[in-house]
Image (tube, rainbow, N blue to C red; front, side, top):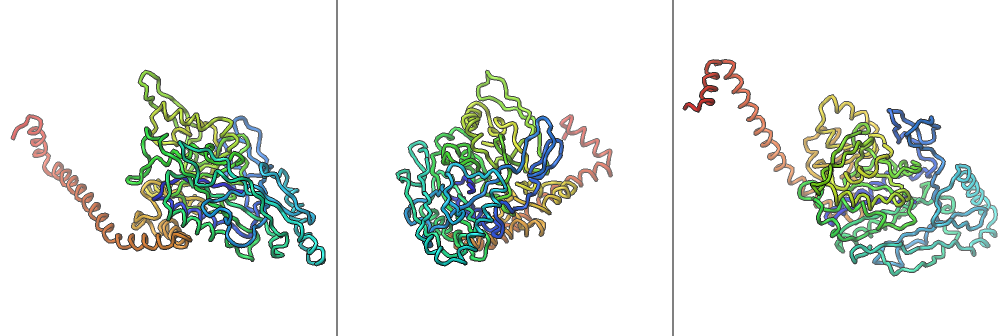
Amino acid sequence: MYHIVFNCNDNYVKYTAVLIQNIINYVDKNKAFGEISEDVIYTGGGGECYTINEKRPNIANKSECDNSNIESKSQNTESKGDLNQDSKNNFNIESNQASIESNKPLSLDSNNFNIESKNLVLNEAKNLAKNKKDSIESKSQDSKDSKNCIESNTLSPAHHPINGKDSIESTNQTPTTKKIDSNIESNTNTKQIEHFHFHIISDGLSQSNLQNLKILESSLNKNSEYSKITLQSTIHTHIISTNEFDNQAKWGFEATQSHSAYFRLLIDRILPKNIEKILYLDTDMLVLCDVRELFRLDLKDKILASSSGYITPTPSFREFQPFDKTKEPLKIMMKNSFCSGLMLINMKEWREQNIESKALDFLRDYKSEFADQDALNAVILDSISLKGSYGILIYQYILASKQKQKEYEQILNNIKIIHCNGPAKAWSNFFYFADSNIKHLVCDTWWEIALGTSGFEEVFKDLHKKLQADALSYCVKYLRNDMESINVKIESLQRKVFRISYPHKAFRNFLRRIFNIT
């Protein structure tokens, strides 16, 4: 079970929908969780890199990371039809799973989804294969077993009202039991079910956007019968108040600035308490990998794993000025400063170390330049650094020198997740004059996904047409700015030529300016 969290306002929910579609598109439907390539996603101190399952030397102050805890998800499919027949106005969390072993229903505890041994995964797979063989050889046994049903609970999440408002999901739900016939299509029992829960935190969503999200959710649950795994997707919306952050500076690019960036600090308050690991992503991310790669990382006692957004982890010294001028500035040496736009979070440690309270205290006491990111970096000083290929800041690449861009290109050749930060949004005209390779990698890829996002197709068709119509005026504006820049340079060169050609005149003009002689 994978929990992925976003925050956005109503205007940005369409881009969040694209990101959800993007994530599902890049899940390898022919690989179960344990079969995903063990790419190097953790960079140790001093530049050493280790694969997830590699035995690492015992060096002080190095984070441990192995493959001892593989989260093997094994769930049962619901009967065909609408996913949320019991709740037309709410998105449900299905937090209990079941799998079949030796032709008997096996219920897994809803608070414990970790299987501590690879052997157990392999044994379960062998048992599933044996069950399929037995079902083919013994029709009568299948008929007998069909009377046994697998029970899966749909639990009401323990949401906490925020300033009188609650999640869009019903808080009046009581645990209900759904019966699922055990012989739903012969091949479904051999498939591993991967359940993705997408959580959208917002200060308000329109009814049209909510309806479009339900259409998207229904579309995501249409699986191919030829795939090795079955994907189940549930979209949850959590509506909160921004009152808590009214005194904080808004964050975002130009007209899109809002307080939504701070919402991620409240994840423990919003999400169900049985969730142990989440992946947080900013809406302006472009995912070019199977996100289950990240979920394979064992965070152990670390609070989170993230990347700086640059080529390598970025140590930095920061000095934060207090609002109370009688207090001393807060000086911190950050070993691995990270971008809060991508975070794999250990919710158990987040809760135990009281990160929410510490971050909110920091925002009340000190001035923040980068909204919640400063607060999180100030209170989480020992995080795991992901490779630069996860969350590279594409705007910084575009602004970089030619020499620096060559270093970035080594990452872009094996890019995993791109962060379209600042003005470099994939849905804007920013990439109109960009390098053709970058334009294809970012802009063309994003638009291909956007125009195929169920529920939002017409929205993006209209936006795409508008951008094409605006392209000419954008070109004129771009060229005008270029001409103004060229004119400034020409005037500067003319002054330099004059000083070189007529040094005595230049000196005379200098004296006139000094002594104010006309």
